[in-house]
Length: 73
Image (cartoon, rainbow, N blue to C red; front, side, top):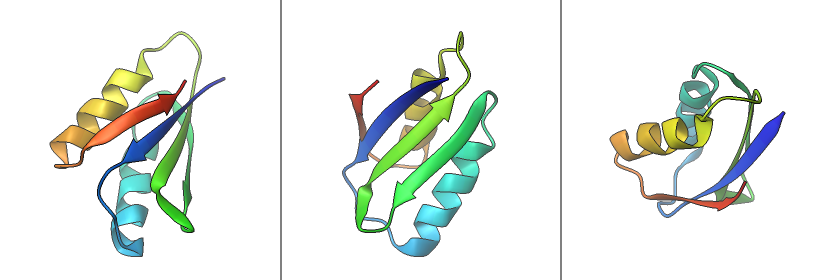
């Protein structure tokens, strides 16, 4: 299992965070997505080994009009 932590520049409300979590969990090979309501800029994405999920996550976030940065992998 691999994990990336993503920082999202925009501040999202709880509805947007729920939608984002659902969209990320629907990606192939993503096994879990955690969002911290106390720190709504942070998202943790767990994914199956041997897949290039970080770039897919970044592409999906950019297509939503967000400005993400991977802060740890």
